[in-house]
Structures are given as C-alpha cells and as structure tokens.
Length: 372
Image (tube, rainbow, N blue to C red; front, top):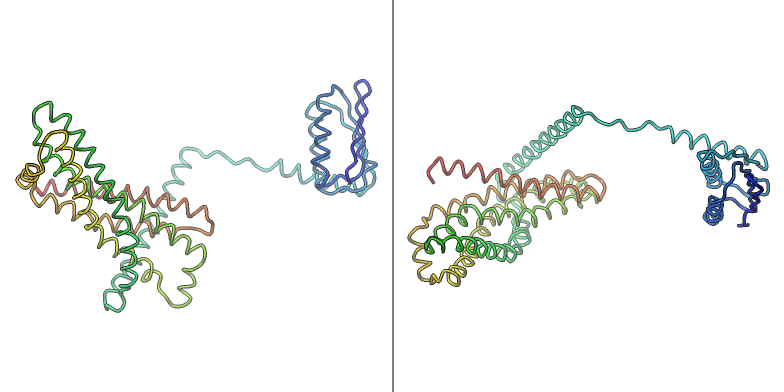
C-alpha cells in the first residue's frame, strides 16, 4: 500500500520518513514525490524507513540509488532502518549494485587487432563459401547421374517465382534506362549533327553492358534477397533439420532448383531487357532527333553485329549462378534469431551486386583481348 512520505526541512537538515510499502508497485509514485525535494537546498538528509511495512529488492535498489544520488551531490546521508531484514535486503542490493558497477570496461581494439579480426572473419567466410561450393558441386554431379534426381517440378516453380514474375519490373526499368541514356546522348549528338549515331551508342552500350547489369541488379535485389530470406526462415524454424531427419537432401530440394531456374531464365530476361531498352531509345530518337523507326532499324541492322547481342546473353548464366549461389549461401548462414535474417539478406544483395560487377569486368577484359 502506498502512503505519501513525510518531508521535514529545518534549516539545512532534511528528514524524509517513508511509510507503507516500498516495493515495485509503489516506487514509481514515491519517485515523483522525491523528485520535488531535489530542488530544496540542504546539507544533511535523514532517510527514515522505520515505518515501512514491506520492502522488496526493488525497494532496496531505490534506497541504494537515493543514497548514491545525494552522496554524489556532496550531501551527508543518514539511513535509519526498521530491522535486520531491511538491513540484509539493503546489503544484498548494495553488494550486487557495486559489483555490477565495477565490471571491466570493454577494451578498445587497436588498429592491428581490428585488421586481424577482419582478416580472420573474411578467411572463415571464404572457407565456408568454398565448402558450400564443394557440397553444391557434389550434389550437382549426383543429381546429373539420373534424370529422376532432377526436381523438374521445383525448377518450374522457381522459374515462375524468380524470373517470370520479375519480367514486369525488368521491362519497365530497362525501358526507362533506354529513355534516359538516349535522351542524355541526344543532347550531345545534336550539337555535332551526328543524330544517327545514337543507334550505335544505344546498341553497343545496351547489348554489351547495360541490359545484363540492369537485369542482374534487379534479380539480385528481388530474387537473390528472397532466396536468402526464405532459406534463412526455414533454418530458424528448423525445417532444414527436419528435412535431413526425414532423409531429404536440402541441396537437392532447395539449392539446385533455384540455381538451375535462374541460370535458365537469366538470358531470357536479358533479351527482354535488350528489347525494352532499345524501344525506349527508339522513342527518344524519334521524338527528339526526328529519326524515324524505319531509319533507326535500318541503321541498327547496318552497324550492330550479332556478336554484341550474344556477348550480353552469354553473361547471363554466370551472373545468375553468382546471384543464386550467394543468396542461398547467405540464407544458410542465418543464425537462430530474426535479426540475422535481415543482416544476411542485406549482405546477399550487396555481395551479389559486387560479384556481378567483378564478373562483368572480367568478361569485358576477356572479350576486348579476344577482339569480340
């Protein structure tokens, strides 16, 4: 039961007499009353707890913090307790509070320690990624020994979920990129009267670089992150452990179908991206540079060789393999908490995009040296 504390201020001496219960249920109300006296001016304070009917550990913490507050202000504090039970409760709280305040502070890491730890974490991550690829390779070889081992139903489902449902966003994104690239190029070409060369610029840049990269980035953000989140959630709910217990191989049922589906569909998605980006460029060329669709297509056939189209298409399966593998790997790295899902999902997108850009750079150097 809560009873308002009695406060008596005489010159520089303050006395507070507590009544009723001093427990978790009443502390919040008592603290509001105590807050009022913190504006008073005094040099000594007496805390009288002889009229307290019940004191729990929450009340003990309140007494400890009240004593500490006034002592830190340089005020002399006297405490009057009712009996040995109150004294033992306060001693228990005080010893634990002092022990917790004396916990060793976390040592700041030096530059060498931070560098070493990061290198070690990257090394462990690299080893686990190699282990993932090894298991993936073995499972793939085992599945290819017989058509019965290939999960065609799961592959068809993943083709629909990961690729076909992404056609809309890829088509729209590519169309807008084609518009923007053509519009920015048209401004410069008009200065030199080289309007027709917009076809050359669009064909080379879109077919060889922009469409494969745009498609890969969209798929990494959409499907790659979905792979990480789905498999991560399955790991948290122990569905992967249940599959192993029942004799099902998670790699055969969850990993391979996703990778195969994306590898199959990525060239098709890049083709759609090519067409939509060129269509966006054609519209700008017609409206801004007054190049008719017939002239645009004739110029396109004249200067854009088929090899430029195939260069972009060939990149598709490699990009797809990287995106799917990294997304699935990050899903398998999820620990037993929901925060880990968000962390690994984010990392899957960042790492996938980085891997795609590195792979694209390797292709660009290789194709240039080969004269393709």
